[in-house]
Amino acid sequence: EIHWRTNYLGTMQLTLGLLPALRASARQNGDARIVNVVSQLHRKGSNAGLVGAPPRHDSWVSYGLSKLALVHATFELQRRFGNEGLQAYCLHPGAVYTHIADKGLQGNPVIERLRKSLAPIERYFLLTPTEGAQTSIHCASATQLRGGRYFRNCAPAAASKDADDIDVAARLWAQTERWIA
Image 1: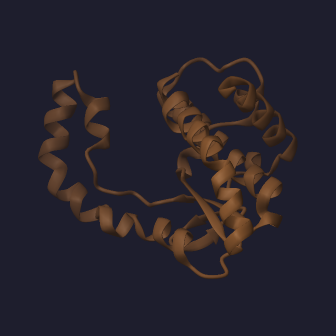
Image 2: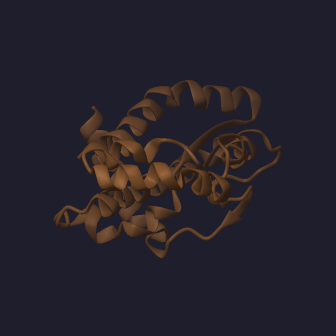
Image 3: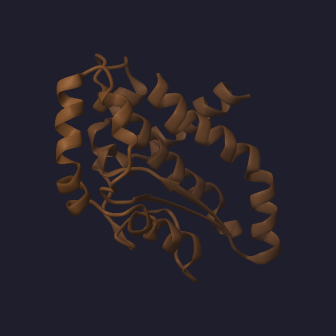
C-alpha cells in the first residue's frame, strides 16, 4: 500500500488538485505540462493487478503496479485534456545512483555491508542524479513535444502492452476520482 499511496495516489491527488490551474494555463498560453516519473519497472505490474483482486504481495510487483497506474493516468490525462494544450508525459529516468534502495535493505546487515562494499562499482555503472534528470528536463521544456507518450533517454519509447488499454485507464481514472473526492 505504501507504493500505491506514494507513487500513484499522492501524485494523482496533487495532479487533480492542480488540474484547474494547469488547464487555465494551457488555454491562456497554449502549453502546460505534466511530467510523471515512472519507471521501466512499470512492466512488473499488470492490468489484472489493477482491476482484479490484488496479487499476492511482492514489493517489486506492488511498485510496478503503482508505476503502471501512473502510466495509465498520464495517457488518460493526454486523452482528456491534450486538445486544450495540456500535455502529459511519463518517463523512465534510467538507473540512477541514489540512496533510494538503502531503506529497503535496512535490517539485512549482510546485504547492507555487501552493497556498501560494492558502492564504488555501482556508482561507476549507474547514472548520476544530474544525468538521470535529463529526460524529465527534456519532457518539461522541449518545444513542440507531443504528450501522451512514454520517454526514455530523452526520446519516445514503448511502454508495456498493458499501458495501451484505454478501458483500464478510464476505469482507473474514475476510481481515482472517487478515492480522492
